[in-house]
Length: 211
Image (spheres, rainbow, N blue to C red):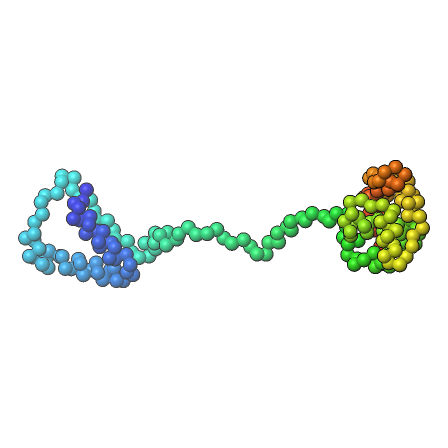
């Protein structure tokens, strides 16, 4: 074991020399060797130290050059950082969006029923009644409607429809049916039937709209 004084001295020397280049380190070590050469400086012989332990000190550690110390210094400089940024060239898969309700967007884009009828291919009384029913259900958000509502809708654009009740019956008798009866409203013989267009009716009505 080296005495504490020697260890401190060695550490101080290493810290002072590790930042210098090889030529500077060599010049300093040559100067120290010459400065403390007892043959050149007899007065240093008078400085006696206590006898060392029987085992004796081992050879002094070799002072590393700056080039040898660079790998260790690089490890000290490197600090853990953030993970590498994601490659912007990678195209992420789009998140699928829920599909629109069948039959909805095809009909609500028209401002009024007259415009819907004008841009349709409906040429029969039953086809026009189906379009009117879909318009009331999808555009006007009626949960159910009757023949009176359909007659009123045609009158609002200056047109008449022949026997909407018969057309509604025909739509319910289709195979598969295009219309469903949801119930009746009113007492006895004055009761009025209420209807709603099903998914098949919406599909057929979309076919009446011009491309």
